[in-house]
Image 1 (cartoon, rainbow, N blue to C red):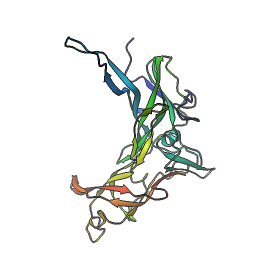
Image 2 (cartoon, rainbow, N blue to C red):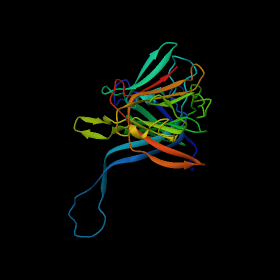
Image 3 (cartoon, rainbow, N blue to C red):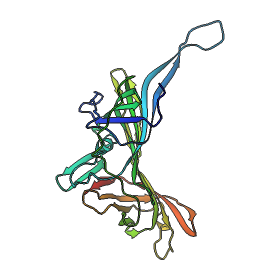
Length: 306
Protein backbone atom coordinates (compact mmCIF):
# COMPACT_ATOMS: atom_id res chain seq x y z
CA UNK A 1 0.00 0.00 0.00
CA UNK A 2 1.26 3.48 -0.85
CA UNK A 3 2.18 5.66 2.16
CA UNK A 4 0.47 9.04 1.99
CA UNK A 5 2.86 11.92 2.59
CA UNK A 6 0.34 13.75 4.80
CA UNK A 7 -0.35 10.73 7.04
CA UNK A 8 2.31 11.36 9.64
CA UNK A 9 2.34 11.45 13.42
CA UNK A 10 4.84 11.69 16.25
CA UNK A 11 4.77 10.70 19.92
CA UNK A 12 7.49 12.14 22.18
CA UNK A 13 8.08 11.70 25.93
CA UNK A 14 10.76 12.70 28.44
CA UNK A 15 12.93 9.79 29.59
CA UNK A 16 13.26 9.10 33.30
CA UNK A 17 16.57 7.36 32.58
CA UNK A 18 18.58 8.63 29.64
CA UNK A 19 18.54 6.33 26.64
CA UNK A 20 15.80 4.08 28.04
CA UNK A 21 12.59 4.05 26.02
CA UNK A 22 9.97 6.01 27.97
CA UNK A 23 7.19 4.48 25.80
CA UNK A 24 5.27 7.55 24.61
CA UNK A 25 1.56 7.01 24.01
CA UNK A 26 -0.99 8.43 21.61
CA UNK A 27 -3.16 9.59 24.50
CA UNK A 28 -0.55 11.56 26.47
CA UNK A 29 2.45 12.33 24.25
CA UNK A 30 1.27 13.19 20.75
CA UNK A 31 2.61 16.26 18.92
CA UNK A 32 0.50 18.59 16.78
CA UNK A 33 2.97 18.59 13.93
CA UNK A 34 3.67 20.99 11.12
CA UNK A 35 6.26 20.30 8.40
CA UNK A 36 7.48 17.09 10.02
CA UNK A 37 10.29 15.13 8.38
CA UNK A 38 12.84 12.55 9.47
CA UNK A 39 16.26 11.50 8.21
CA UNK A 40 16.38 7.91 9.49
CA UNK A 41 19.79 6.76 8.20
CA UNK A 42 22.38 9.13 9.66
CA UNK A 43 25.68 7.49 10.57
CA UNK A 44 29.08 6.50 9.19
CA UNK A 45 29.27 4.38 6.04
CA UNK A 46 32.25 2.04 6.26
CA UNK A 47 33.46 0.01 3.29
CA UNK A 48 34.48 -3.59 3.91
CA UNK A 49 38.21 -3.65 3.27
CA UNK A 50 38.35 -6.89 1.34
CA UNK A 51 41.11 -7.65 -1.14
CA UNK A 52 39.62 -8.34 -4.54
CA UNK A 53 41.15 -8.73 -7.94
CA UNK A 54 38.08 -7.35 -9.68
CA UNK A 55 36.77 -3.82 -10.02
CA UNK A 56 33.35 -2.85 -8.67
CA UNK A 57 31.49 -2.10 -5.48
CA UNK A 58 32.10 -3.90 -2.22
CA UNK A 59 29.65 -4.28 0.63
CA UNK A 60 29.36 -1.31 2.98
CA UNK A 61 28.15 -1.07 6.57
CA UNK A 62 26.24 1.73 8.29
CA UNK A 63 27.79 2.23 11.72
CA UNK A 64 26.37 4.38 14.53
CA UNK A 65 22.94 4.73 13.01
CA UNK A 66 20.93 7.63 14.35
CA UNK A 67 18.03 9.82 13.26
CA UNK A 68 17.42 13.52 12.72
CA UNK A 69 13.86 14.76 13.20
CA UNK A 70 12.73 18.28 12.23
CA UNK A 71 9.30 19.81 12.66
CA UNK A 72 7.34 22.91 13.64
CA UNK A 73 4.68 23.35 16.31
CA UNK A 74 2.37 26.26 17.02
CA UNK A 75 3.62 28.52 19.81
CA UNK A 76 0.93 29.08 22.42
CA UNK A 77 0.52 28.75 26.16
CA UNK A 78 -1.56 26.04 27.78
CA UNK A 79 -4.47 28.41 28.37
CA UNK A 80 -4.04 28.08 32.14
CA UNK A 81 -1.44 30.07 34.07
CA UNK A 82 0.94 27.74 35.88
CA UNK A 83 0.24 24.81 33.54
CA UNK A 84 2.99 23.80 31.14
CA UNK A 85 2.30 24.06 27.41
CA UNK A 86 1.95 20.84 25.45
CA UNK A 87 5.38 21.29 23.88
CA UNK A 88 7.08 21.62 27.27
CA UNK A 89 8.85 18.24 27.01
CA UNK A 90 10.30 19.27 23.65
CA UNK A 91 11.84 22.40 25.17
CA UNK A 92 13.27 20.28 27.99
CA UNK A 93 14.88 18.03 25.37
CA UNK A 94 16.60 21.12 23.97
CA UNK A 95 18.56 21.92 27.12
CA UNK A 96 15.96 24.08 28.85
CA UNK A 97 14.83 23.59 32.44
CA UNK A 98 11.14 23.86 33.26
CA UNK A 99 10.18 25.79 36.41
CA UNK A 100 6.50 25.77 37.38
CA UNK A 101 4.92 28.14 39.86
CA UNK A 102 1.43 26.77 40.50
CA UNK A 103 -1.38 28.91 39.08
CA UNK A 104 1.15 31.59 38.13
CA UNK A 105 3.83 30.80 35.56
CA UNK A 106 5.93 28.26 33.69
CA UNK A 107 9.46 29.34 32.76
CA UNK A 108 12.05 27.73 30.50
CA UNK A 109 15.71 28.66 30.96
CA UNK A 110 18.96 27.12 29.65
CA UNK A 111 20.94 24.69 31.79
CA UNK A 112 24.60 23.70 31.50
CA UNK A 113 24.42 20.11 32.74
CA UNK A 114 22.01 17.25 33.55
CA UNK A 115 20.36 17.50 30.12
CA UNK A 116 17.19 15.48 29.69
CA UNK A 117 16.53 13.06 26.83
CA UNK A 118 13.48 12.18 24.77
CA UNK A 119 12.05 8.98 23.35
CA UNK A 120 10.18 9.44 20.08
CA UNK A 121 8.01 7.33 17.81
CA UNK A 122 7.63 8.58 14.24
CA UNK A 123 4.84 7.18 12.05
CA UNK A 124 4.55 7.41 8.28
CA UNK A 125 1.32 5.53 7.69
CA UNK A 126 1.93 2.14 9.28
CA UNK A 127 5.72 2.50 9.21
CA UNK A 128 7.03 3.25 12.70
CA UNK A 129 10.56 4.44 13.51
CA UNK A 130 11.56 4.64 17.17
CA UNK A 131 14.54 6.54 18.51
CA UNK A 132 15.76 7.27 22.03
CA UNK A 133 18.06 9.63 23.92
CA UNK A 134 17.04 12.46 21.63
CA UNK A 135 18.25 16.01 22.23
CA UNK A 136 18.34 19.03 19.99
CA UNK A 137 17.81 22.71 19.46
CA UNK A 138 14.86 25.01 18.93
CA UNK A 139 14.23 28.27 17.11
CA UNK A 140 11.39 30.56 18.15
CA UNK A 141 9.86 32.31 15.14
CA UNK A 142 7.68 35.41 15.05
CA UNK A 143 6.81 36.71 11.57
CA UNK A 144 4.37 39.54 10.92
CA UNK A 145 0.83 38.36 10.19
CA UNK A 146 1.84 34.71 10.64
CA UNK A 147 1.34 32.14 13.40
CA UNK A 148 3.95 32.15 16.11
CA UNK A 149 5.83 28.86 15.98
CA UNK A 150 8.74 26.81 17.27
CA UNK A 151 11.05 24.93 14.92
CA UNK A 152 12.71 21.87 16.48
CA UNK A 153 15.65 19.85 15.22
CA UNK A 154 16.19 16.70 17.29
CA UNK A 155 18.84 14.01 16.98
CA UNK A 156 18.20 10.58 18.48
CA UNK A 157 19.71 7.10 18.75
CA UNK A 158 18.00 4.64 16.40
CA UNK A 159 16.05 2.01 18.33
CA UNK A 160 13.78 0.10 15.96
CA UNK A 161 11.56 0.19 12.90
CA UNK A 162 8.50 -1.93 12.23
CA UNK A 163 5.01 -2.04 10.85
CA UNK A 164 2.53 -0.68 13.39
CA UNK A 165 -1.01 0.65 13.71
CA UNK A 166 -1.20 4.35 12.90
CA UNK A 167 -2.00 6.18 16.17
CA UNK A 168 -5.10 8.19 17.00
CA UNK A 169 -3.43 11.15 18.74
CA UNK A 170 -5.06 13.06 21.59
CA UNK A 171 -4.25 16.72 20.89
CA UNK A 172 -6.60 18.56 23.23
CA UNK A 173 -3.70 20.10 25.21
CA UNK A 174 -2.38 21.86 22.10
CA UNK A 175 -3.66 25.42 21.80
CA UNK A 176 -4.00 27.59 18.70
CA UNK A 177 -1.11 29.98 18.15
CA UNK A 178 -1.51 33.73 18.07
CA UNK A 179 -0.56 35.67 14.97
CA UNK A 180 2.27 38.19 15.19
CA UNK A 181 0.23 41.38 14.95
CA UNK A 182 0.21 44.75 16.69
CA UNK A 183 -2.57 43.65 19.03
CA UNK A 184 -0.94 40.32 19.92
CA UNK A 185 2.60 41.64 20.52
CA UNK A 186 2.18 44.52 22.99
CA UNK A 187 5.91 44.67 23.79
CA UNK A 188 8.94 44.46 21.51
CA UNK A 189 11.94 46.43 22.76
CA UNK A 190 15.66 46.40 22.09
CA UNK A 191 17.68 48.30 24.69
CA UNK A 192 14.39 49.65 26.04
CA UNK A 193 13.38 51.18 22.69
CA UNK A 194 10.04 50.04 21.22
CA UNK A 195 10.94 48.86 17.73
CA UNK A 196 8.61 48.39 14.78
CA UNK A 197 9.35 44.84 13.69
CA UNK A 198 8.65 42.41 10.89
CA UNK A 199 10.13 39.36 12.59
CA UNK A 200 12.13 37.79 15.37
CA UNK A 201 14.01 34.52 15.35
CA UNK A 202 15.56 33.36 18.65
CA UNK A 203 17.77 30.27 18.61
CA UNK A 204 19.10 28.18 21.47
CA UNK A 205 22.21 27.50 19.37
CA UNK A 206 22.84 24.07 20.89
CA UNK A 207 25.72 22.03 19.48
CA UNK A 208 24.51 18.42 19.39
CA UNK A 209 26.15 15.37 17.88
CA UNK A 210 26.03 11.59 17.87
CA UNK A 211 28.66 10.06 20.14
CA UNK A 212 29.43 6.38 20.47
CA UNK A 213 32.28 4.73 22.28
CA UNK A 214 32.59 1.38 23.98
CA UNK A 215 30.17 1.58 26.93
CA UNK A 216 28.82 4.97 25.85
CA UNK A 217 26.16 5.95 23.33
CA UNK A 218 24.67 9.42 23.62
CA UNK A 219 23.50 12.60 21.92
CA UNK A 220 25.46 15.16 23.98
CA UNK A 221 24.86 18.89 24.03
CA UNK A 222 28.45 20.11 23.82
CA UNK A 223 27.85 23.85 23.84
CA UNK A 224 25.23 26.58 23.60
CA UNK A 225 25.55 29.82 21.66
CA UNK A 226 22.11 31.44 21.75
CA UNK A 227 21.32 34.29 19.42
CA UNK A 228 18.48 36.20 17.83
CA UNK A 229 17.80 38.12 14.66
CA UNK A 230 15.16 40.82 14.25
CA UNK A 231 14.03 42.67 11.14
CA UNK A 232 12.99 46.15 12.24
CA UNK A 233 12.32 49.59 10.81
CA UNK A 234 15.36 51.84 10.70
CA UNK A 235 15.08 55.17 12.48
CA UNK A 236 17.12 58.36 12.71
CA UNK A 237 20.30 58.05 14.75
CA UNK A 238 19.02 60.89 16.93
CA UNK A 239 15.97 58.74 17.77
CA UNK A 240 17.83 55.49 18.48
CA UNK A 241 21.42 54.80 17.53
CA UNK A 242 21.48 51.11 16.66
CA UNK A 243 24.80 51.61 14.88
CA UNK A 244 26.51 52.51 18.15
CA UNK A 245 25.43 49.14 19.60
CA UNK A 246 27.35 47.04 17.06
CA UNK A 247 29.95 44.94 18.90
CA UNK A 248 29.38 47.11 21.96
CA UNK A 249 28.08 46.36 25.44
CA UNK A 250 25.18 43.97 25.92
CA UNK A 251 21.67 45.38 25.68
CA UNK A 252 18.37 43.78 26.75
CA UNK A 253 15.71 42.24 24.51
CA UNK A 254 12.11 42.10 25.78
CA UNK A 255 9.16 40.73 23.81
CA UNK A 256 5.66 39.86 24.97
CA UNK A 257 3.34 37.70 22.88
CA UNK A 258 -0.29 37.48 23.97
CA UNK A 259 -2.54 39.39 26.34
CA UNK A 260 -4.87 36.77 27.87
CA UNK A 261 -3.92 34.96 31.08
CA UNK A 262 -2.66 31.47 30.37
CA UNK A 263 -1.45 32.49 26.93
CA UNK A 264 1.10 35.25 27.57
CA UNK A 265 4.70 34.53 26.63
CA UNK A 266 7.46 36.86 27.82
CA UNK A 267 10.78 36.53 26.00
CA UNK A 268 13.64 38.12 27.92
CA UNK A 269 17.39 38.26 27.38
CA UNK A 270 19.21 40.71 29.64
CA UNK A 271 22.48 41.04 27.73
CA UNK A 272 22.67 40.84 23.94
CA UNK A 273 25.58 42.06 21.84
CA UNK A 274 24.37 43.48 18.53
CA UNK A 275 26.38 42.34 15.50
CA UNK A 276 26.90 44.14 12.15
CA UNK A 277 23.54 44.48 10.40
CA UNK A 278 22.28 44.92 6.86
CA UNK A 279 19.57 46.98 5.17
CA UNK A 280 16.58 45.98 3.05
CA UNK A 281 13.37 47.57 1.79
CA UNK A 282 9.77 46.73 2.70
CA UNK A 283 7.44 48.83 0.58
CA UNK A 284 9.03 52.26 0.93
CA UNK A 285 10.41 51.65 4.43
CA UNK A 286 14.08 51.02 5.15
CA UNK A 287 14.46 47.92 7.27
CA UNK A 288 17.52 46.64 9.09
CA UNK A 289 18.20 43.00 9.88
CA UNK A 290 19.76 43.10 13.33
CA UNK A 291 21.56 39.96 14.56
CA UNK A 292 22.62 39.68 18.18
CA UNK A 293 24.48 37.17 20.31
CA UNK A 294 22.89 36.45 23.68
CA UNK A 295 25.73 36.73 26.19
CA UNK A 296 26.32 34.46 29.16
CA UNK A 297 24.05 35.36 32.04
CA UNK A 298 21.98 33.74 34.77
CA UNK A 299 20.01 32.77 32.80
CA UNK A 300 21.12 33.60 29.25
CA UNK A 301 17.45 34.05 28.35
CA UNK A 302 14.02 33.01 29.57
CA UNK A 303 10.70 32.02 28.00
CA UNK A 304 7.98 32.56 30.60
CA UNK A 305 4.32 31.64 30.16
CA UNK A 306 1.78 33.36 32.42
